[in-house]
Amino acid sequence: MIDFTLPADLAAERDRVRQFVIDKVIPFEKDPRLTSHGPTDELRQELVELARAEKLLTVQAPVEFGGRGLTHVEQAVIYEAAGWSTLGPVAMNCAAPDEGNMYLLGKIANPEQIERHLIPAINGLQRTVFAMTEPDGAGSDPNQLATEAVFDGENFIINGRKWLITGANGAKSWIIMARVAPNPHVPEGPTLFLTDGDQPGIIIERTMNTMDRNYVGGHGVVRFENLTLPRAALLGETGQALRYAQLRLAPARLTHCMRWLGAAERAQSIAVDYAKTRTAFGKPIGEHEGVSFMLADNEIALHQCRLTIWHACWLMDQGEKARHESSIAKAFVSEELFKVTDRCVQVLGGIGISDETVVEMIFRDMRAFRLYDGPTEVHKYAIGRQILR
Ligand SMILES: Cc1cc2nc3c(=O)[nH]c(=O)nc-3n(C[C@H](O)[C@H](O)[C@H](O)COP(=O)(O)OP(=O)(O)OC[C@H]3O[C@@H](n4cnc5c(N)ncnc54)[C@H](O)[C@@H]3O)c2cc1C
Image (cartoon, rainbow, N blue to C red; front, side):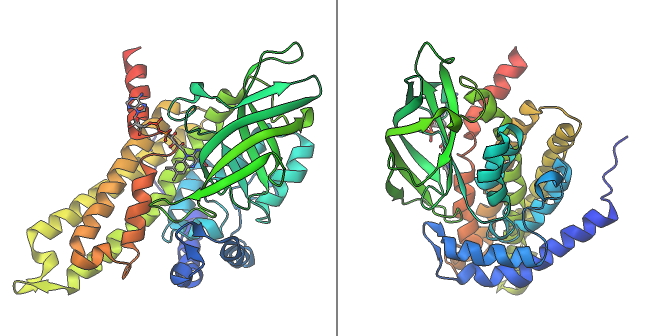
């Protein structure tokens, strides 16, 4: 049986989140601490405290770690509401990359790592990074991983270079992907390490200047220079990084879809308001078919995106990996929401490209969404291989 009814308590919580975002978070959208490299840590901390006061901090975390253990479908409903402001997920500690990192740590970290890295992250006290992408190695194809970890029987010595590492600046906990070189002690291959960020072997070369501006700390270029980590820094088993990355990516790419759906709805609401009040050629612009069709196309796309997300979430709640469906969702939703925000810019006329409204900021972030956690073409490549198998 297919039932789309939201339980009353979930619908009420969705409304409470939306109201929290409108009343408490949106006022910070003009804060100078929302920089071209994303919100500063100071701004993030202030927002986190607001969510904490409303008991809306990290609600997705498992119950045993202090959260509410939301199902994937419940997350879809709550994150969409949080996404009404791009700062909403930052406040509620369900923004990337921490949200996906916390999910992964909850699945594979050992008790010591949970205590040192996961619990403080859930409490909103420290941030995490996931360092995989490389200028000359891992990107769309993580098999090209070039960062190397040489094990001498006691320590792993890591060398390599990464970029596009979100939140690198100021993050406390680092999940690093490196290839363990052949050795007589442990299995070789792509491996995850978990360590503190303030190590002499972790060098942040610079923060990249990018189109988007909603990830705390922006995106860093990082060099690992003889980063020396003990065996205890292993996150899970050696040689298993790509399997763990998949564990993280399927739900993480869906949570991106949820949050950006909320942001696109906000853009649409601004465009609708404008279309009702702005006049041209003797009537409100919304009464011109050219405009009403753009808004109708948006409404259709938003609805389709929500259903696509919910379906993949529902499958995951049934215990399925839903890799195929989450790929379909990521490819479809990122492309559709980009078109939605583009049409919103168009409806707004000249102010659409200005910061008079948040639509311009949403538009730029939406462009980046088509690239991370798998560019659209890579998802289509995977979907194509699956159906031709
Ligand atoms: C805003 C943002 C934040 C990010 N944060 C992080 C982070 O925190 N940590 C991290 O490790 N990485 C991060 N990334 C990196 C992201 O995961 C990569 O950008 C992504 O995996 C693509 O890799 P690439 O950029 O190296 O593109 P490339 O691998 O160079 O690919 C370039 C283009 O080639 C095309 N292409 C590739 N493969 C195929 C194929 N099979 N079929 C058809 N076309 C193909 C696609 O159009 C793709 O866009 C972030 C990226 C962005 C934009």
